[in-house]
Amino acid sequence: MSVKFKAVPRKNPQDMTAPEKFYAKAIADGEIDLDHLALMISDQNTVTEADCYAVLISLEKNIITELGQGRIVKLGRLGTFQVGLSSEGFATSDEVTNNAIVKTRINFRPGKRMRSFLKDILFKKES
Image 1 (cartoon, one colour):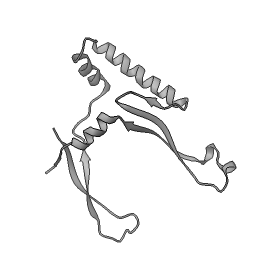
Image 2 (tube, one colour):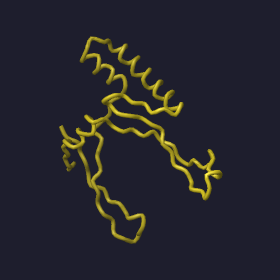
Image 3 (tube, one colour):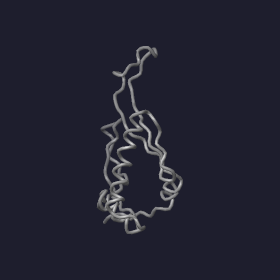
Image 4 (tube, helix red, strand yellow):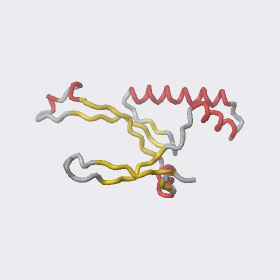
């Protein structure tokens, strides 16, 4: 099992006249959806596919609800979800308002097992 990658050219955004350099970029080898995940999980235990699907949908809904309350969502060994943001800078804290926020995101910090997976992953250059 390995992850495919390819070499892609990129310009230097700080010096557009500089020659392009090539960088490795991971290539997805298909995708898997929630339905298929539910089927895989049900095949690995005694829970039905429909029950697995219902739990996964509920998990998504509850993660969104808890993130919306400003909470960090810890999913045990899987990892942690938290809302992050970027804002403009101001001279005083009074100037920082909701309007200063320019970007929001969901940060995911993988658990120990997922992080160690990244250390052992194999890569194969696409020809």
